[in-house]
Image (cartoon, rainbow, N blue to C red):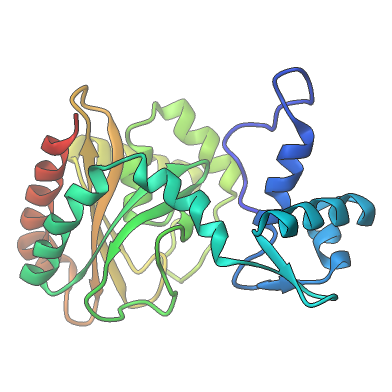
Length: 260
């Protein structure tokens, strides 16, 4: 599981431990573990086999999990939980046509993401052609420290909060270009805060260059980030800043104006 920006609360009147454990079981399924045995679920969540079994059977009764008698897997009904978040924020329905226009204009993929702990979570994506080896879609998570959207979202936080999240993330090199020093990363976030946009050159994946801009509410707070990604062999840093950045900033500003 990705590290959290806040420590988990202790069981008490305002914390339902059984519900929290149920969410842990759901989150134990992933692209790396699309189906699991009871023992594997227990190991991944730190639950006893009996505890994991009760939760899995409850989820199965509710239709969120199915089993062939040995292996458990999530059902499509689990998507209801994620789409409840998206449907509660109609801004993304309004933003999608603007993002599609940006993709048509620049011929590069466009995404929107929000900050969750030390990660960014994709809430909308309009692809054009495959530029990453990583398969991304709504709900995908990436580290904030080495992504353009992550740095834009971190830039809205005070320095002490940025440092706390960076320390929790334990930055490590994903490519030979990845910045991992906490001090250097803080400096990059501060630069993003000053200039109002972020460019990350091959820190997440070799050959990938990415630009991001903030989507802000009427109070000026960043509620999401918008990005454009392309191949570094045809979109170098100068081209990205001269050609892609102005259009990206205009799109982010247009989406921001749609916020209530």
